[in-house]
Image (cartoon, rainbow, N blue to C red; front, side, top):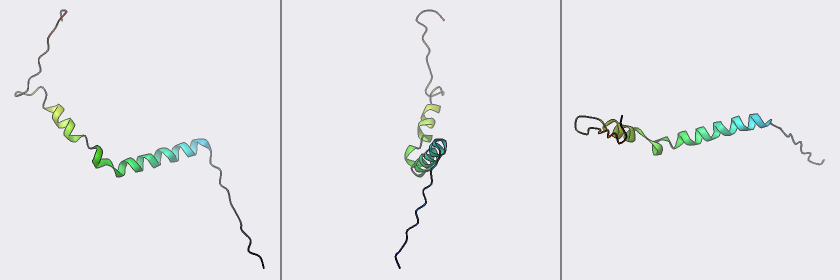
Length: 63
């Protein structure tokens, strides 16, 4: 007896493909989240305008 092969093809709509692609990219980026850690950058920005690091505003054309 010959082996018979049954193939099933699933066609997804374009919107479903886009949603699945966005989810896949989100999962991929979440795996590398520690590489893109911005907490240190936000901590350095928070230091601007403190007592030890004041901000100076100079008006050149009147304020």
